[in-house]
Length: 228
Image 1 (cartoon, rainbow, N blue to C red):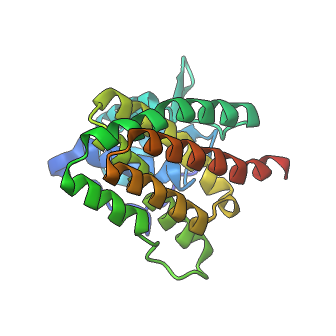
Image 2: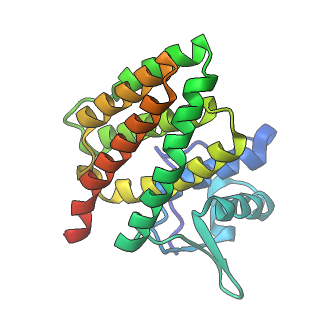
Image 3: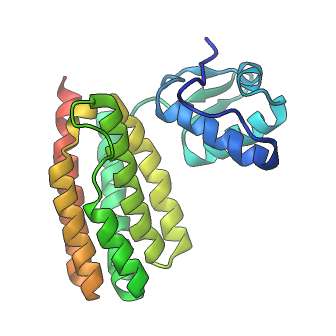
């Protein structure tokens, strides 16, 4: 494997928070495809790149395995998780449709005034990148989308539900980085706005319905990528 360059992607690992810093650095390299889906991961190569010992790299890879972003096989080490197949993509959205409407309904019942204000702010947020800058704008949009969904899950008040949702999102982000044209920021923002409004009203049924409609529409927007 060619050791990826961290220039412009991640900052060198900081000693004070070494394990977390290495984890975030490796996650960024995987999510941005600096280490391609299905590639072998070189522990020694990454340790040299990040200027750390192999130990925090191994610890970070164990966490990334739990996240579903890398796989470990006996005698062959770690590889990054391949991109989703059409069947895996459908299964992922089936799980999202089970979990995220429930999280939105719980959020409507648990949200504080500050939570409601933050959700509406995040729903209205726009990528801080010029519209003509395709990849960077897509990456910024992906980050905004993840932040909104993770915030809904957090406001739900269920740590287990939030953890399950975040792990599912990691797989989807890998897919979206490979197929950036499948996202439509305007539609997504409007759908997020309807979810945030329902949560702000404390209407659990409306929040669940809005999340269900949003995820169904998002699935439809992504499907054309599998026919190319």
